[in-house]
Length: 558
Image (cartoon, rainbow, N blue to C red; front, side):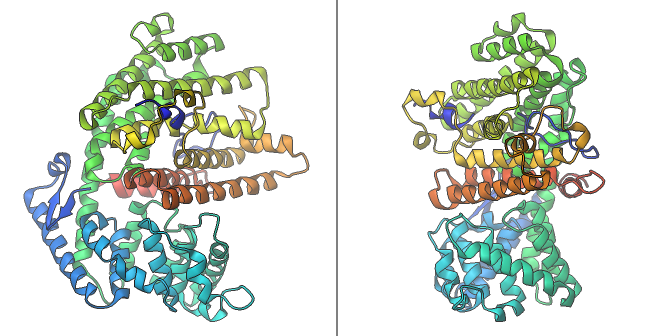
């Protein structure tokens, strides 16, 4: 099995910034229920007593009965139940039931009711079915090609239309119109709605379902369900039990990572390096959700932490000559390689060499394939990207905006991190590896990976652009775009960047919903990485990150 993966997975640091600090421009930067029994990972079973697992199993049995009853009743109620299970992040307990109930969606996708048709479409697209938004929405558009004004009074239908519109793959003309129409009329309706529904609509507009982390949205959806006159207590209780299980597990993982980081000693040896263990853990916690991925989250946090350290060594510590030797040592990949390096680089090299080999051994033990050669090449590609940025900075060179963004995909750290994700997940690697070694030199990650990387780089640079005092540090996409387009204003450049981000979301949707090159677990990880970006970079007027702070309180603190 040779190696498209060194071409497929190549990634500066996955670069969130200190919570209270303003942004700084810089180098990028389940169990499972089958037949009524929960199959949890061993790690998750150590977190809750047996009585709590008995409670979960009893709740899932009750919900299974509800699903069977609704299959014999209303297709609309069946779809709404499935949607609630997904929104509460407990759908993984009911995969067989949900799959067998998808017929209700197929029956309703051509309904003349806006809510029924749009919800059916979204559930089917999310499940990988080939459905056309233009076909579904045609019956709701008048002779002028606009949505019928009568629909503006259907708040439930508008919310569903708005959710549907974000599954845009860039090829369906009706979806941009759907987003514009639903956003406009939902915003106008808020003042007339009862307070609970008004809050839900506002939250849906500010944080669209598809573009945001499901775990974060789940809490708001649970609060909304609890405000309704008709409630499903078993579903709510299962969601709460699942939430508490995840929180306990995340806390245990965080403690293990803290111990590892302190024992590693790099923070003491390289005082200028960032020491942000909690933020580093937030990425895999968001990207790989589910109790069975606990070990993987811990190992990936180690990789991310080392990407940060390497980034800081390139930015703040090494000379060009030392950094060139550091990069060459990564290419050599043996125990003697770092002997001629400065102490801090030698320690960093030994740590990343050890951890990468440990992850490769773990992948081999679990999936029968040792990817160490692919992973070390992914590290080499990352280092090459850092070297490019260092040379630009040292020579005062202003690269073309497109060249900067292309290299920024590499130095975002996303391709490197996803290379490790890929092999740890055992994601059908045989189907994704090409025997043509000539492709190794391309170092181009697949679109499912490069899209989150570009979204990260552009979001990061949008935040950096707001800090005028830091703009000259090493440039941003906005800076280089303005150099190439002197007639544009900074506001023009930032609007262009937002359009690029929207375009990357469309391509990511195409890759994960239409082409489906990778399995569901890997596709969800790609989506979650893109969703996490806005959490990490949505600064308020005080240069704080309120969504991230809220997310951390919700998922990590008792």
